[in-house]
Length: 363
Ligand SMILES: Nc1ncnc2c1ncn2[C@@H]1O[C@H](COP(=O)(O)OP(=O)(O)OP(=O)(O)O)[C@@H](O)[C@H]1O
Image (cartoon, rainbow, N blue to C red; front, side, top):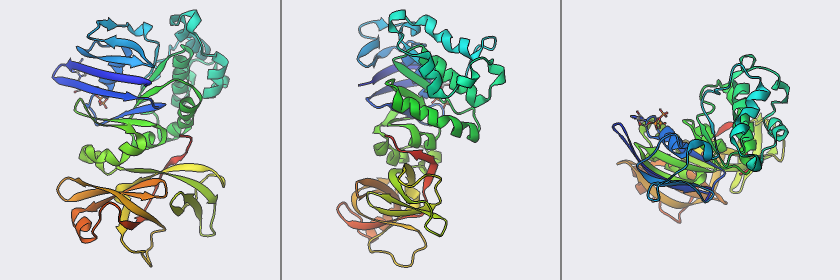
């Protein structure tokens, strides 16, 4: 397991009691404000001392209350990237980058400065000072500084939250490269489902200091119905598509999933590119017979894999289409009237798809 976390901690009136383990490349902590995300990150970093629990990274124990092990933060070998870059204003980018290395014993410095600079595309910035950088550039430098310290784990606490959409879009591919090209496990706090859908391999859902669900992103996205009302509508599934033709003559791209053909408003990606799209459960309808004369473009054949009730009057139906899973949110009444149950062949009508910045699938 890359990260094993068990924390019992009282913070004023708030009680944190969580346990999760993840072998994933990027584990997202997701939950409403005040659910305990930052408190978990702080305990992993060693900035606070929980009363009970254990934290280990790749089998190396950083904290174990029972065995009275508490490594101080500078000995944990953890990189921490915050919402604001927190660069030293009087140092150049190059000096900022090298700063983190002082705390890493020489024998454990595996990070190569020039490789990190290339990975984050910041070569042209090295002589500048932070005041001359855009918010996105500053954040890339902050990530670089954390990497150059040769961490064994990277903690990122809402690293994109302070950036506008354009800057976010600029930095997301670099976080993807970080996930795919380095061996460092990442624990990533975010409020954005789009970010999680695009970046996370694993998700830990939190609510009021407790874990409500944890596991691979594809298993957890449908479970967003566990979240408070404001986020529930985001429950859904990730589907992998390949671009077959960029324009079908009607301004739509023809795509293929393992379960069938899709048509989406023209996607800015070349033929043959693989993309991951997010399909919200509220945007999927179910028909028991092949629908004729529907305006929706995407009708996928599948089989019901599960029906879970949500609250009193609704249900989340999981449909297996090829090797992809789709979730549909329907009323309890529809479940009864259409006889929706596991094993039943159905058609999923997808009303809309969220490209989330057209994430290329490397997972
Ligand atoms: N040192 C402390 N003393 C008292 N209360 C604390 C302390 N640290 C955190 N809390 C409380 O613990 C709760 C969880 O806070 P935390 O910052 O971990 O939540 P979060 O999920 O990261 O929220 P947000 O998304 O708003 O950043 C909050 O109610 C907060 O006020």
